Amino acid sequence: MTLHSVRPGWLGVMLVLGAAGPVAAQGEKPAKGERNRVVRAELVEAAETFSNLYDALKFLRPHFLNPSSRSRTGSEDPTNSFGAGSGYISNLAPVVYLDGRKLGDLGALRDLRTRDIEEARYISPTTAAAQYGMGHEGGVIAVKRVTGTP
Image (cartoon, rainbow, N blue to C red; front, side, top):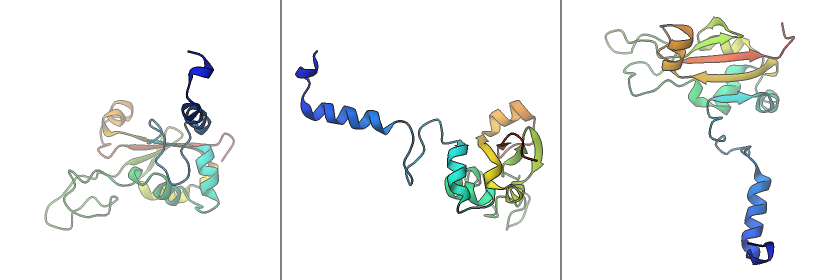
């Protein structure tokens, strides 16, 4: 097949698709494989509006902060381990790790400045249990700071 045998319309589509690349435009869903990861470029842009990591993730990847509603039966607050009704429910909120060390619950993200973060990644409960041990029913939000940040 030669370039001359390709219809002009298809050439334009191929050029546009090639120029678009894997980066999602603002307001679009992230590229497949990036749904559970926020990278430095996104965080730098978000830091202009959101000073703490909790607010930035709430905007960029709200699913990081909202545990699965399939097995939650009480409170709508993901940081609350007690249901609004009777009985105890397990805490399905993700556990936050900073540079490999356990930091705490989702509230800990409010103490992290967005501009100081290199990457944030959501790790599923199954993978979190394998990497960090039991007690991660809501998964893990693993945060890496920019090198040299105190």
